[in-house]
Length: 245
Figure: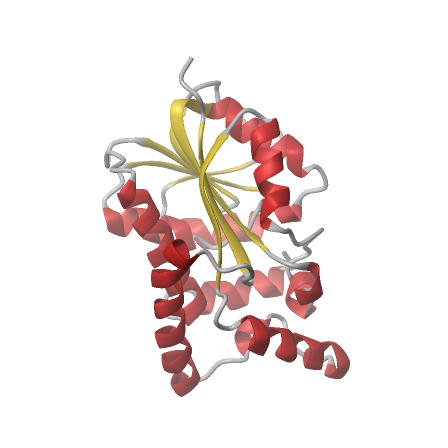
């Protein structure tokens, strides 16, 4: 991402409806697996630390983060002062079979070789370990935020499932989420592409009342998406495991 986009995220991620709701979804899925709080956890593509906040607040004590951006690492160190290092998700500086849980949320769409990134995730996972992955969905939603974040692509759910399966992971859960706001976001992004306002991130388009309303909508969305499995959404969630030898 651009440095200015990191700065916007760092300023808002603690309270913005998208980041707050996404953390709720992820930690709920992690809790379903009953992963020990002492488990070895890797957060790949930390950005400014939204997942690190979630893991810390949930009590995980053995967490390492990785990001390729010096700016992202600076924000993470300022907020958390934890074990966060610089590295490439396609060439992870970690040993084989090391992690109980790997998070790669809104990461693989940033790299040229997304399959290499998934192979590396598979490599560093212990047999029986869990990969939690989220990616942006549907190319027709491509907008300014994809440009700000320097995305390479958006995905259909079956495409990511195929990549995970090809690298030897077993996909246990997958579904679209943020489906209730799919049409409003499609309309807004179409309009923004035409107007092209002077922004560093779409997340700047927010104010307290809007944040409260969207928080309610998104909370309902993430509570229902895992069960109704909608055929569309702004993002895809996937949970996969590495087979036990």
